[in-house]
Every structure is written in structure tokens, then in C-alpha cells.
Amino acid sequence: MFTWKDSFSSKINEFDNQHKRLFDLGNHLYSLVRNQSNDDNYDEIMQTLQDLQEYTIYHFQSEEKLMEQFKYPKLLSHKIEHETFIRDLQGLLKKDVDDNQIKISLEIIQFIANWIENHILKSDSQYGEFLKSKGIE
Ligand SMILES: [Fe+2]
Image (cartoon, rainbow, N blue to C red):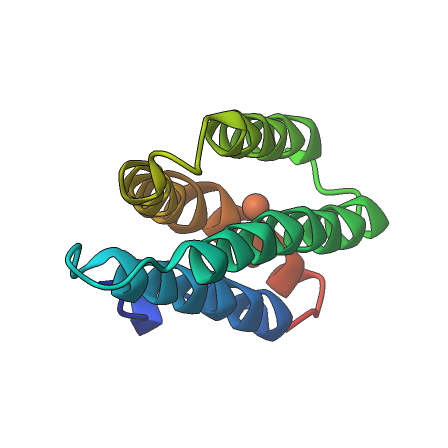
């Protein structure tokens, strides 16, 4: 589903590794819902969604900490994007996952695809250039 490519690199190793974890979580979720005739995967889907929520908060905090440390000029708009992602994710997870686990999981896979396309490939690559110019890799 989600395949890492070098073009996704932010040029900051720590964050590339964290982004790869996002890909793994997305792929795991997809593998759980791919075959809808599978036995009920409710517990594992719920665990993956919980992991995704915790990971998202941890990852955004890591990025913001380094951007703050180096006074990244676009920090505020970057933080607003992060807040929007967290709010959207929490909104999805507040729905009745119990009765709609496949549907909500597919929405979350779409959410991850949007995150990769509109944030990792754009905003994150911009801080990558900036932090690299400060000697971080
Ligand atoms: Fe980011």
C-alpha cells in the first residue's frame, strides 16, 4: 500500500525513520482490513489505531522541538498543519469504530495518504532543507 521512496526523504534521518513507522502502521492497518471476510480483527485494528494516535503526537512533537530549537521561520504554519492532522485523526477515531471498523480504517488509510502527499512531501521537505543548512542530518 505505502512504499517508501528516497524522494520522500526529509533529509533528516530521525524523521525519515519516524515517517517510515507511519508507512508501516498504514500498511499494517491495510493488511487488517484488506480481506473483509477475515475473522473479526477488532482488537488488532483498535490497537493499531491507538498506536497511530500515539505515534502521531510523539512524531509531531519531535519535529516541532527541533524546529523550535533552530528557530525555523515557518514553525507556526507547520504547527497549524500538525494540529489539523491531530484534530482530524481524533475526529475519525471518535466515530463509532466498533460498528464501522473497516470503513473507518479505510478513511484513516486515506488520511495517511493525504498526510504523505500534502505534508511529508511539501512542508516536511521544507524544514529538511532548512535544518540541513544548519548542519542537522
Ligand atoms: Fe511535519
